[in-house]
Amino acid sequence: MFDIERLRDYSRDCPLIDLFLPDGLDRDSVESLAAICKGRASLETGAHLFLQEDHFNSLYTVRQGALKSYFLDKDGRERVTGFSLPGDLLGLDAVYSGVHRCSAQALAASSLCQVPFTKLEKVADQVPELHRQLVRLMSREIADQQIRAADHTALERVAGFLLDLTRRSQQRGFPVEALKLDMSRSDIANYLRLATETVSRSLSDLQRAGLIKIHLRDIKIVDPERLRISAGSMTTAPEWSADHARYRD
Amino acid sequence: MFDIERLRDYSRDCPLIDLFLPDGLDRDSVESLAAICKGRASLETGAHLFLQEDHFNSLYTVRQGALKSYFLDKDGRERVTGFSLPGDLLGLDAVYSGVHRCSAQALAASSLCQVPFTKLEKVADQVPELHRQLVRLMSREIADQQIRAADHTALERVAGFLLDLTRRSQQRGFPVEALKLDMSRSDIANYLRLATETVSRSLSDLQRAGLIKIHLRDIKIVDPERLRISAGSMTTAPEWSADHARYRD
DNA sequence: CGATAAATTGAGACCCGTCAAAATAAGTGG
DNA sequence: CCACTTATTTTGACGGGTCTCAATTTATCG
Image 1: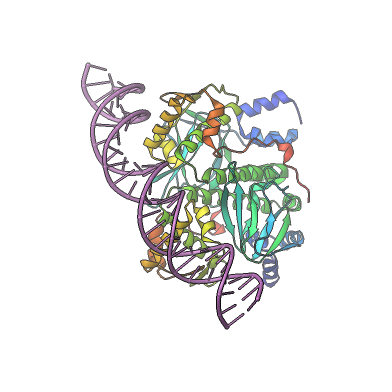
Image 2: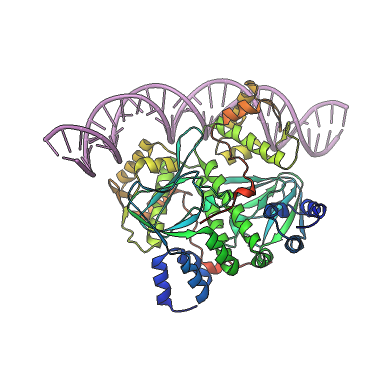
């Protein structure tokens, strides 16, 4: 472990460092990891980072902005699979096939850090702890998806969505009071497997009940506790410290 | 690479070998992998392999039988997250937290191969290709979940479920004509986010339409093509050969 | 200011869940 | 092997949550 200030610089530069940090990489490991994160990508609103069926080369971490991931199913319908905010990692679902299973589109002017996957693998081959952390990240994504996939009412889903965004927002150190939605109602609806109108109605209901305040895409969480109750079991598990991820046989 | 017959023996002994095979491990790697797969677990119908909140020690591969995975949400309702058939790997969702996020229960007399995770990591540290394959397996699970999570009608879901079971069945070399369901209608319904009655009705509809023949838990696929049409986009992506999983920068 | 897009609100229809009951299978004990 | 019980599956009737269609309102942008 080395100069914590230097580390912060790296984190700011490429959030990937953050994702792999908890496990205490040594100076050389962080350096070699930072060395392959030199690629940058800037996207205007509406621009695509990659398209479904594209050859998979790199993972990306979001530095600024927001993106949506979606795929077109056999019937040509759009299916939003997720939203990526600063600090998030994109592209893990493409690793196994070498082909992107979904498209990634910027919802706002965004800046990303490109992580060539073959280079990441090469570094990880020499820094096993890095490989292990990658496995942990993916494990978490699998577990989270299982919770999200469960069956919930429209109100629970919308409330849960707001709470999820809030949690991710404050996890990155953003103020919590004001939540800024970068995505349209239509995208939210598609993501939550609801109709656009249902999302709008649910939001209105939450506002009428005094739990939130809506002004277009600016949302203020007025009563987090009652919002949590509205979300029911539609809330992601609490944050686990990396210290807990230790195993015995 | 070494004696193919020897390899088959290993595969029979522990399906984990199969899962990591496509990438051409050398003799020593296969040996060391096989060495940590000595643990065996036998479960009678209804017995649990592990429980939600249990400390996570090992992954498991199914040798024989069938299991269901489920968790209890905050409201105490059961949520079936998946079914594990011979060849499947269990427990990946627990890696990140070190705690099992779900319980695994045998639906039939089952035999499993235990894979202590710390040992697997140690071997993987020295055989990077193994770590890479683990990442690929998880990537595939993430991508599959995204497809499954999408919004579909009851009929599409049930038809898709039957096709998924059929595909996994024949992938393991079982005869395809007769499909044997190890799980109850209630479990299927929970897994598909439907009511038990809706699953039953959908199956009846499929039978009336002449696509399948039902006798309790024995199901015969009469018209696979029309069944595929009924499933709509509720079908998993085609099998990808490992040869495609090669990257450039 | 006018045009386009996004968001909200309303009315009606439909799919599916809930409640209820019957049919069938699987045990259980005599 | 047969009554009895219990669990599972199937089928029916009904109601409710959500979708679809449609209109209105509000914001964005030239």
